[in-house]
Length: 351
Image (cartoon, rainbow, N blue to C red; front, top):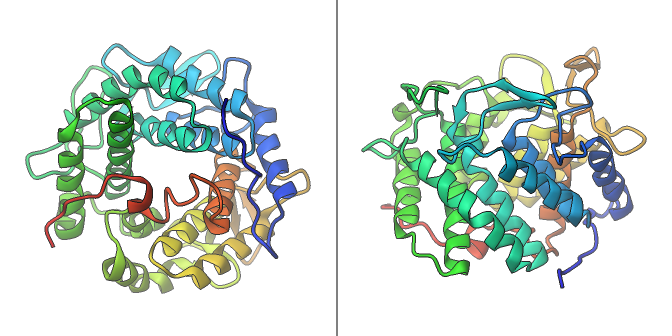
């Protein structure tokens, strides 16, 4: 029997009932085949789709979450990959993005932590094994992981820091799944450690994306940088990205606040031991909540105009739910993004 835990809430900011309303809003937009589009009629990408599946499970919508994972199993290519964007009736963007392909491992481990359903983990294993194999074929000798392959198999020529940071976390989740099921994959953790070392020591290994907030906080959110290194990184560009009482700018040179990145950044600060900042960010994100539990994707200040096109996306709602769980800290998966060594195999990275 799968475990059931109360829907998380954060005292003084959002109740468990309100978070459940947000979970149910995601479920409302899920398609019958399991796909979770960004919004009705929109596309889905496997990364944000998995984020939504994790949020559904946190709200007790286990059947809907497992239907989302089945959608991935049904669409996986023979080489272990998924395309970057799907529409209800087919592929929209056929690029094969390594970060997107690795992320189902994070979702599968999260789902196991919540449910204890070994059958689910065993069902996911062949897909995860193939997906991680595809991803590691893109790892360079130095350790970074190239962004993607074209649909014909041709690799892209550069790596991205945000994507590689997320992959580092996904590799640890995949290794945890392997260990739980008794499969030996020591090279997965070796690859994660090499990747973390590059993130820590070789900034020039990645294409420059310094305008983007995710490149700032993702190495912390995903556990490649911890302790003093994490706090130093977050402090260094705080002024560039944080707009007090509003949230996180998605790019440093525009007053464009995004609720998902605000919540992800909150989890990064929580992982760095900066709970006060994490709580402030999450509190600011609640101003973007609408009746019914949905959240605006982005808001331009000072005009207060919502973008893009008034969008209230499922992936934004999912980020809020994951951040609520991390801040409440009571659920069995709540520390997955905030205390990486608690639930994952430890990295072995040279100091």
